[in-house]
Image: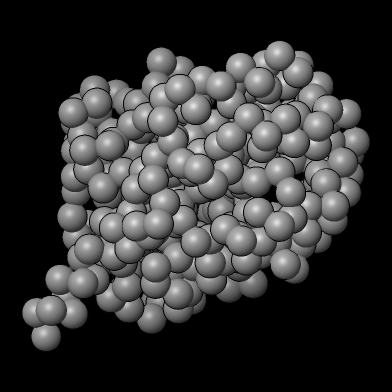
Length: 355
């Protein structure tokens, strides 16, 4: 299969064109057609010479995704199920906020992290997405927005879909450089957030990239015993090692990190865990923010339930009293398979049953 041209950074395209006998300035023309005019065919690039168009057509495709299914929530959230060229399915979500339109992208087909409460890991990872397939999610959502005719644009990105972004690090970094480039989509680095389940060594690498991209850390428990119980990745990267990497990131970037914490009834939602979490973050509280997330139950993980409203309030109040910046995440898309990975899992089951 030909590679998607979306997977090339601007600098890579410049070099590739020069290596194939084209002038470097063609890269700017091509990018303008791809990301500003958003054409779907190389033949529509009117000011690009025929030799260059033929060269591009021989080596690249433009859009590597096709829409398989779309679900729209009453609150305006839209979940897309995209089919890749090899037949695999991935999820992408469009969310509307007061500050703009945010897209949650997927980085892997399936997930091997194995969090015991998560729908994304119901199906193990079969492969990483290419950078072109990750960029392609943004472009397909932008195509949907263009077709609505309201002059809307994707303004924010969260890399929190299916898969562990730092387990697909090189493609993640290419994706970030493509969508952030001012010559193309020009989505500001501070409008992009990457979430990790805790690959400590990659958090260090990410700090050394010297980007302004935001980092979110999925913690979900304040001690090793509990975190290892619900997140097997903690056995490889226990909390002490994770906090060392977090401290490096904070010192290197001076940027606030969001601590993601899913509240599971009678598992990690008691006042005891809230106090432990506050103690863990005490010396880091100036540059951390705890995002408390009400759990979206998953049929296959029936042992976990959503915390009671009173437990959520107590947990929140305990953190606030101890000086920890925190909030409870506003829920969106609860009527359309809200948990990440649920839609994909259901569709794959339907495929299997149809065989």
